[in-house]
Length: 224
Image (tube, rainbow, N blue to C red; front, side, top):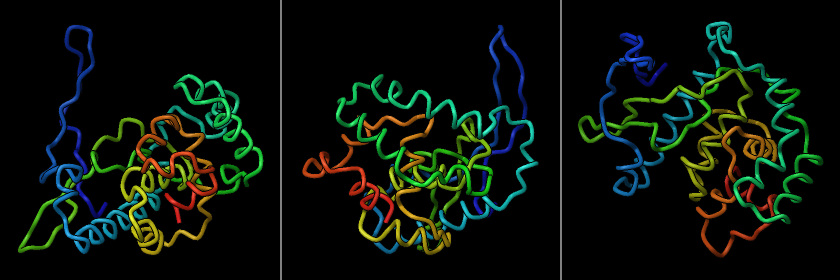
């Protein structure tokens, strides 16, 4: 990986509870520093993040053969529980129906895209940055707890939602460096089917004037 990740030092059980001791990554949370970064430094971080994720997705999936979750079974479960999952977070019924329609009418990227090792939560909180001679660089990626073998779009949905977050031009830059050729709707599909998908919360993070916009618009906003 072009970005350091914390290695495992030791694991064990203490008073019946499992624990792990891991290496420390250097730098500060990207979330804590984001508002202080210049536009060019933000672009540098996005470029490095794209190269990092591209490298992760190129690693042989058999290096994590111990993973328990099978993609096909997981997707079947997510689709079966789609409406109840979103209703459980208090999402309005018209939005639940819109999500169901979106899943029924968009291409089944989950069946045709290649399987890769996914972190599944690429967000500012999990990226660390440092500075050397005035140059900002990624210094760490943490929190592989929910990682799984999935499809690239399953990772890309958190990038657009939490990392670039609709900021003009940043996801386009990420796509170009990563060399992603798919459609924004395919990534949006994975956001709606994600294990931690909570559209009520996701919509609340948007500027108020676009919170009621249809999913096609939001796919463009986050993933174009």
